[in-house]
Length: 178
Image (cartoon, rainbow, N blue to C red; front, side, top):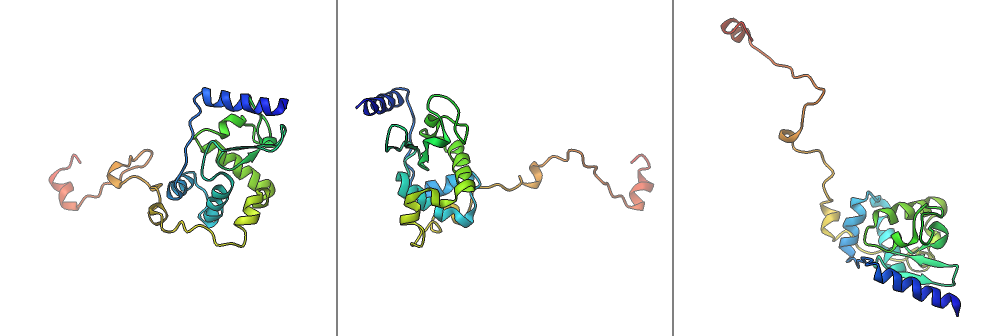
C-alpha cells in the first residue's frame, strides 16, 4: 500500500511541476530520430520499439513494483536513472526521461542498446523482431532528411584559407600595382 501511495505522489508531483509531454506521430518521431543522428539502418526498429513500449508518448511511466519503473519514450528502466537526482547507468534523472526533450533519452537508449541490444526491451522482442516493421519510408523526412549539409558557397567564410588571385600578363602590364 505504501509503494502505491509513493507512486501516486510521484505522479502528482510530476504533473504539478509542469512536466511537458509530447505524443509524436510516426513521421514526427522519424524526423526527430533522424535529427538526433539515429542510424537509418535500425530506424524502423527504433520506431517500432517506441510505438510498442510507450505509444510514442514521452511521459509514459510504467510501474511494475516500487523498485521497477520504466520511464519515457524508450521505457528505460530505473537501473539506468535515479529519481530526484542524476544517477544510474546513464547518470540521468528519471524525471528527465519523462519530458518532451528526447535528446537525453536517446543518449541513454543508445547506451542501453550498446550494453544489451534490442533484447532489453521485451515488447521489441515480442512485437518487432521478426515482424513487419513500421513503414517510415513514406515520411517526408525519410525522402528529404533534415539538412545537415554545408551552407551555400556564398554563405561560407574563407577562414584560414588563402585566396589565390589569377592575373593575366596584360592586367599586370596595365596596372602594375596589383
